[in-house]
Length: 196
Length: 168
Image 1 (cartoon, one colour):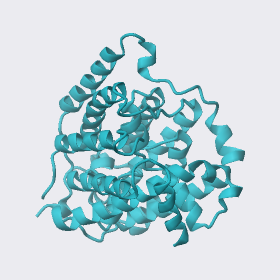
Image 2 (tube, helix red, strand yellow):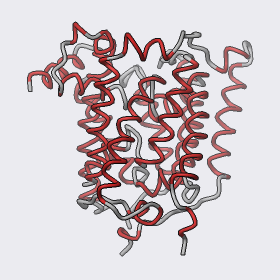
Image 3 (tube, chains in turn purple, blue):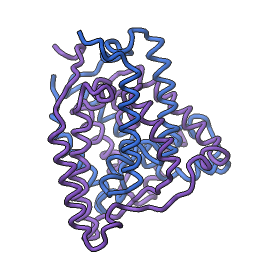
């Protein structure tokens, strides 16, 4: 319990939004995911089987719209970049493991908690597996995982290759992703347990 | 059943991301996998001073931890009052249809894939939220590499792990 209070105190001192705001961001995040039902096994594993396309449609639309909005917010100093570094081995090995497990569990770390909150016991077991994953990663980080990730090649953005044309690149990127979201054919794998 | 269309979800999620990124919001991206090693540190009672990784994720882990509590509340309330989809269950319908109807099989695979998922996310430095949504929205090259690798790996696994000819 002390550590949970410590967690909250840490957020209060971080200047990344008030405790209430961070909690509220979580509530809205969970609410959107639950209300669109994209946390369902049939949506995520269903996409892996190419029997459902709601998840990629929503993801591409989200990224398309956000990329344009965020770029202009950064331009007027209303937001900042928080780019993750290019670590080739980490991205390729990690991405491969992540894709395999996402197809099998039918969740990711953001949608999993929503599924647990709606009563999915299998996902709770998956989360316990995840805690052990976090434990092993922490215990063997210095000796094994950090060397495995490889050297960081910096925090490059696509726009860094098009100096002088950043606006245009962002606009084209955002529009292409939005168009992809719209033209992906809509397919849905229905969950018969939820059809009345 | 009561649910929002994908495009409404996409617009709302985009609004939430922009709010979170904004200096009037949290001035940081949304992430959802750093909280796991942070909670592992709490559950297994690890000493933060002894483990360099725990030290590294203290701030981000705490932030995401509080967000996670919100996600659980938001998901629970929505499933009870709006979509009315709350139900205690173990085997998802799609698993029963395309894999098997064994509780033990679903539980073992869930544990194993949950374990692998966190190792994968922490190796890559992010997940669907941190890399795919937040990272690609900033046009980060690292996130585009991650997104491409995950898509390929996800689709290949989906093709070979499940019995796709079971459509009757």
